Length: 96
Image (cartoon, rainbow, N blue to C red; front, side):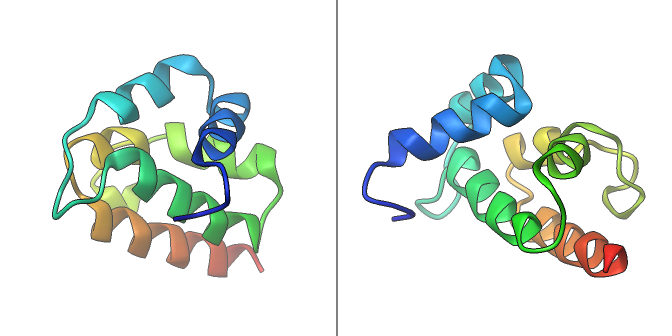
């Protein structure tokens, strides 16, 4: 798991992204035992190593070229975890 209390992680994501995107992530179906919410938290941790929280939050909800114009939240909901993680790493690396 991520921390001792996964609810704290979800609350952190809600504080950054808002309720609607996190509700969509929470409602998404699991892929190989991993939920979109868990994948989003993993991506957030990657981004937090490179950019501030406001930039990370914007990245999650804006259309991304590396995701064929789809927002990362939408891509995670449909189960494109690897694609979103790759896009996040590439974007974060380009910020440094």
